[in-house]
Structures are given as structure tokens and as C-alpha cells.
Image (cartoon, rainbow, N blue to C red; front, side, top):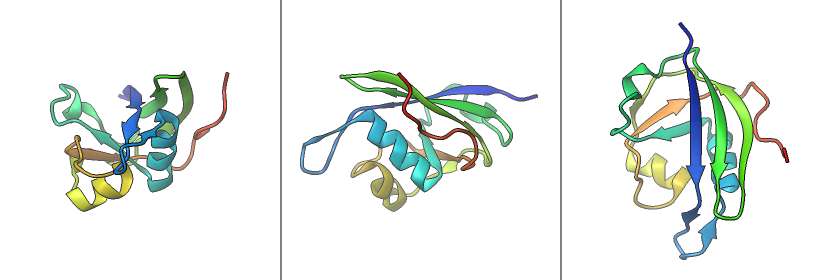
Length: 110
């Protein structure tokens, strides 16, 4: 059975305190082929390879759907170094899910 996931990203603050738009966060996650999932997410154990997702940027200035993806790996703990590379310091997520580079990927939709 295929599950469908809404994969959201919010605006972040960079190491220098400057805002990083949600769209840039989604693009960075796509470029690295991973998506962070909170260990508190009650559906974490239901994420599995073959599932489909839609990426949504929930920025202060703009909220937009950016693309779709296919999950190619189940959730697994992420180390702090990898999280810092993708998200900046102090990761708030404890697990990551791999995504395929297929699908429409981030694209401008208005």
C-alpha cells in the first residue's frame, strides 16, 4: 500500500541570524536528497520506500507547493554533522528519509 505525505518546511534562521526562506530550505533538502522528520511525528514508522510526497514551503511571505517526490528509503537517525550541513546548526529533527531525484522537483508554481 502506498502512503501519501505532505512534506513541509518553514522559514529558518541561519548561523548569522538572517532568515532563510522556506523555499530555499526545500531546495537544499532536494539537492541533498533527504528530508528531516521529527521523532515525535506519530506517523514516522509508517513512512516507507515507494511512498509519495508533496513538498510544501510554508514561508512567512509565501506558501507554495514546490513539487512531488518518491520516498526511496525509510526513516533512520541522522547525525548532527549531516543535519548541520543541510539545515544549519542545532538540528531539530532526529530522523531523515531519502527521496528520489525523480518527480517534478521544486518548480515555480503560482
